Length: 431
Image (cartoon, rainbow, N blue to C red):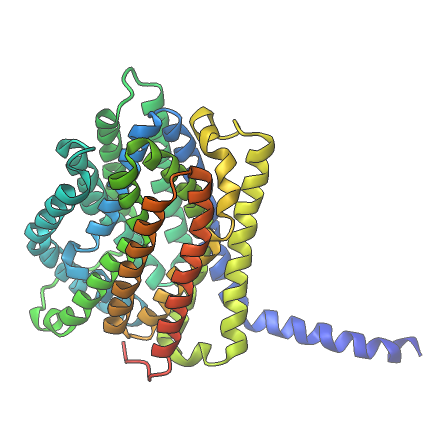
């Protein structure tokens, strides 16, 4: 009797065991990748605490805003050919050497455009607040030192070497944290001196990335291959610039309209929001790889809504936990962060909504809909500019300003969802 009654209980357990066994490789890959995200999260937090409490709030605002602009401008490097390199690593790994040569060639050719765009952005947003030498040094660190490190990460992830990519991510973030700690103990604490520490940390990361982590293949130029993929790469580059413009445009506007001090407080809040995205990006990266091979993966509404609900829930709980800690221990992250601590919980919905907009943009990349992705991100960037300009010019009270960001990002999410899922009704393009 006892054995018979156990059978219905064992069958579900057996099905669960079979399900886990069949996906053991995927689970191990995810654990390898998420370990890198976890390590990166720890060192990113250490880096943030050291830097935010060493620079003044105004100078931290200058650096954070210039860094955000540098990340956006770095997408111009090689005209977006990094996307072709990633697809090659994921689908045709024997051509990595050939496409790496193409990336290096196009990287050199893109430098005049990168310099011109950087100067234009400086004149529009930074000329009255940040010295040109500081801005140029930070953009150099982001675009020509850190972006190639991301290339090494991207290629390793494309090859499925998630453990190596995780280790590189941890080492690179640890070097930045080390740079911030050394700067903290230095004799002078200003944004110009910090820019040199920042260049040093990123240069060390670059040497490690290509000295120890990049696949060893012979470099071969094949111009005809690059020309075939150049249009798609340019779409991706445009989309990436627009993506980071709509992601970081708030920092540029706050600096231009509110000044360096408000920009510093805002940058502290948004940096804490950014930390919630690190584990989410690991999940998105692996989902993108699966969708490259199986574009109809998200054809069912239950799967789409389940993933979006999970992304929002994890992101919101992360910021809520941080907000509770800072409420009871406002100095937990340092004296400068304590000034922004009461405002963190007011942005409760921002991480989830922001991460969902980023996640939806990756879905179109995975399906090869790069031109549509670029157009969508352009529309979102314009909408964000309008909404934030209205908020910054009509709401002068900082707590109410932060609270209003929940509405701004909700509207951006709804617009993104409408544009993304409308586009996904069309057939995926081969990659």
